[in-house]
Image (cartoon, rainbow, N blue to C red):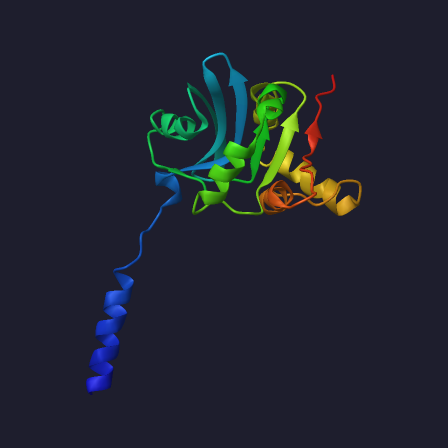
Length: 184
């Protein structure tokens, strides 16, 4: 009898510990882009908005003085809390990438919910322009699926945040990222 009572009490306590996140009440950031601008950093994000039976892409752009301030500024434009657990792609504009991506990769690595399997890439132009193409395709995973397909096909080495950090901090190693070019 005591064991049954203890079991019921423990089950009741365990069910109260969860932090539920309803998909309709959060914004799932799935692709982000970073560009260098005169005032600092321009950050663009593709967010899937799930509604009954369908999903709709939303596109948000913010500008800030530093990389660390760009995502909190994005949060001010959203009507629901943002979540980064589904972030699969970070795209850097060419001018931003030439200045260095170490700050962003370190910030992503320290973010508790960002997957180390997230893909990184560099655009031949501003990341904002390349993300507009992704928005027109209505697929937030368009760029990350391209990387995944070409990695499995054999003509692109496997790369993700984990491999990039390993190459960044490994002695005698060079960082390589997929380079996206827009063809007309």
